[in-house]
Structure formats: structure tokens, C-alpha cells
Image 1 (cartoon, rainbow, N blue to C red):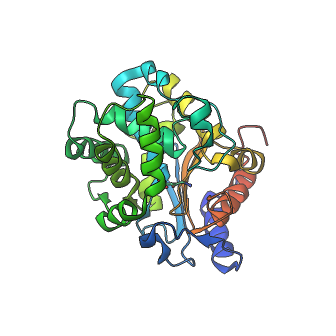
Image 2 (image 1 turned 135 degrees about the vertical axis):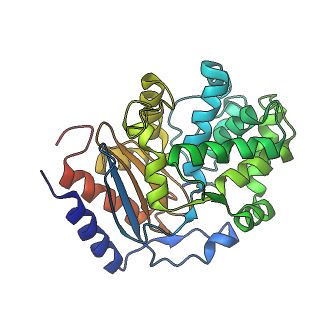
Length: 309
Ligand code: DON
């Protein structure tokens, strides 16, 4: 058996030394100041053991990784009716693209592009105030990570609210097709705040355990979703989790994964491990540059690619 602890430490040391770190996201001003030298990695195994290195305990902005969890919550609330509002196909476009929406009459391609995640947030908001919806999302995150210290970074949410003109456009455009039920400013306020959840790699890897283990937390045996639902969320992460970089991520890493512009990636080795990595510099598709490289090395060394060793 490969020595996971040693591999994680070795990858973190290598990544900390690299100079090709990508570009930190600057369209959300609050994220522009994050130190590009940061690197964290945490892996939670099936037996609950954790291998972690680098800045694995430093909270960062999970951004679009939150979309995995809001999708999980919305499916729990409305089940397969969700798919009337949002598709399940890769978009082949950037995360904030508007071009497909007009042709497809306001139905976003998948729940991970911004338009799709905004539609999912609308579902969670129905019958709730924005405050209650956010409390529900945060409660869920704390429950699955088994950690009451997880918080929303209000300054990141406010920073995105001040500059989120493109998301305002996407939401209004969808609303014009009657795809959204709630007031656009309520939906976006909730969306910006769930994107601004701050978590460390260790917390995020803990939160992802249900996806790696057939819908259950392997430590407590508690079921979060059915095995079928976990399998389907993983399928969406594989095909859509890195936007127009999803093919490259599958090609290089071979695991379901979801990225965020904060530089985090949550990846799932089914039956084996839940993995979180953080390096703030992004590649041109808006995905963590060294995060993907680290996962490629880890999956290769551990022979975890779902496509075979
Ligand atoms: O809506 C946005 O643009 C951000 N809150 C989230 C985008 C994001 O993380 C895309 N991921 N790589």
C-alpha cells in the first residue's frame, strides 16, 4: 500500500516551491488580496484517518464548491423536479457565460455554472426568507463536516455583491423566462453568501465524505443522501465541475471534482477518500492551477482514477 501521509506531505512540499502558480481571482476584490503562496491539502480516508499538509487548516473562500452542497440540499427538498429548471449537460463555456441561456430559454445547462447555481438557490429560497435559507445551508455544512466553527465571510459576500453585475444580468435574464420564482435580489443575496462560506481543506474534505461513501458519513454511519443520489452528484462533478476545464480535469485527474474561484477543489475518490486542495492561483478556465496538478499527482500515486490505474 502506498504511504498516503508521506505522499500528501511530498506533494505539498513540491507545490509550495513551484513558481508557476496561476492568477488569483480579482473580479471579486476581496479575493484579490489572498496570498498566492498558500497551499493546503487534506485527504480523509474511508476509515476516518486524515492525511493533511501545508495550509490545510487555513479557511479560504469555497465559492463555487458550495454549489455541490446547495445542489444536494435542493435535491433533498424537491427531488427530481429540480431537473425541470436546470440541465445536466456540460456547458463547454466559462462559469459565468450568458450565451447558451437565450438559446435554451433561460434553462441553465447544469447546476454548477453560475446560472444553474442561481436557479438552485432559488429552489432553496422558496418558502424561506434569505436569512432562513442561509441558516439552513450553513447548518447543513456544519452537519456534514461535523464542525460548528464553519462560517460565512461577510466581507467576501459584500465584495461580490458590490461587483456581481454579471450574476445580476444572468438572474434577471432567467427571471424573464420565468425560470426563477423569488425576487432576484433575494436570490443573489443568498447565492453570494453561500459562495462566501469559508472552510479549510480539512473541513472541506470532511464535508465531502458522503460523496465518497455512497451517501453516508462512514464514521457515524449516518445517511446524508441515497447512494443513487451521491453517484449522480459525482457524475455531475466529473462532467461539469470544472466548467470548460472539465474534460482536462477528467483527462489528467480522473476523479469527480468541483472547483471554486477561491482556488479550492473538492475531489472524490469513490470508496476511498474525500480530498480537498487549495492554491489560490487560477488557470485561464478559472480553476486552481496547482490544485489540479496536486490532485493529478495524488490520484496517480494512489491509483485512484475512476478510469483505472
Ligand atoms: O458567482 C461567482 O462568480 C462566484 N461567486 C463563484 C464562481 C466560481 O467559484 C467559479 N469557479 N471556479
